[in-house]
Amino acid sequence: MAETKIKDACQDGQTIPSTQFKVNDRSELTIPLRNLVALILFIGVAITGYFHLTERVTFLEHNADMQNVHIKSNTEFRIKWPRGDLGALPDDQAQNMRLVQLEKQIEKINDQHEEYFRHLNGIGK
Image 1 (spheres, rainbow, N blue to C red):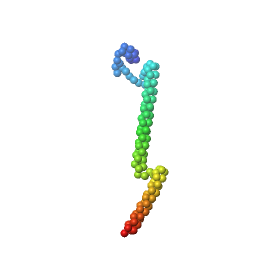
Image 2: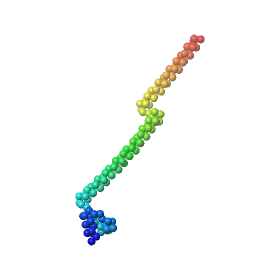
Image 3: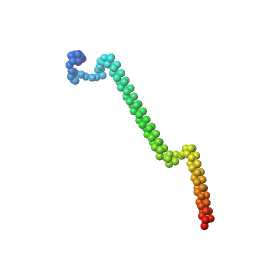
Image 4: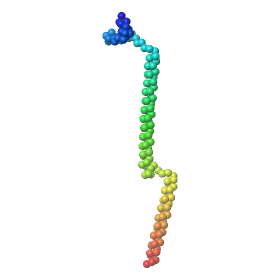
C-alpha cells in the first residue's frame, strides 16, 4: 500500500513526506538508459580530464626543476670561468704560452737596454 502511495504521489507531482520515504537494502532506483550512459560517459571524461591535468602539472614542475638546475650550473660557470677555476681551453693555453714567451723576450730586451745605457754612462764620464 505504501508503494502505491509513493508511485501515485510521484505521478501527481506531489512531494513525498520524509516519513513515508524509507531506504533499505531492497530499495530500487529507476533511471532511463540514456541518462545512465550519459552519466557513465561524464564520469569517464571527468576522470580522463583529471589525469591529463595532473600529468600536465607534473610535467611543468619537472621542467621548472630542470631549468633551475641549468640556471644554477650556468651561474656557477659564469662565476668560475673568468677566475680560471674551471681550467682553460687549449687555445687559451697556447695563447698564454705565447704571452709568457713575449714577456721573457721583453724582459731580456729591457735588460740589454739597461746594460747598454749603463755602458754609455760609464764611457761618457
